[in-house]
Image (cartoon, rainbow, N blue to C red; front, top):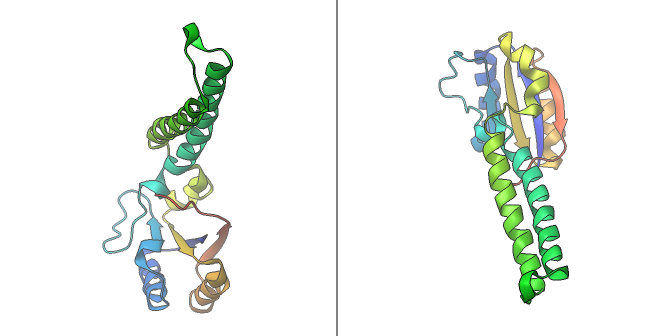
Length: 169
């Protein structure tokens, strides 16, 4: 999947583009709209927590850091067993997985409190009244979707593609 970014001038244009996407078999769950607070979006698919915050990037970083820390602690326990305890390789695996899970959980909770760093470059435009739309499509459909927008809406600014979007949540 690829994430496409579009800046739209107003809610009516956004509604028209969403309608065209739905008619062209883009599921509503793959369309996310970000607007300035107080903008009446009504029935438009608003961006959720995973799009508006750093939840996913923080979870990824926490999983990596926690897993590495757990592996190091497990290896240290095998190399220097405490008070004559026999510690095997299974403890390294357990501590690595436990550290990864704990790190992802803690970091994701912290990430919830920060606005999305991926959307920082659009902050000024959104605050000026434009609407940001994020659309997740298969790689093979990127050109079709961009051509659809270009052909029907010259006032929509195509802002680029994020090459890989996370598979979770």
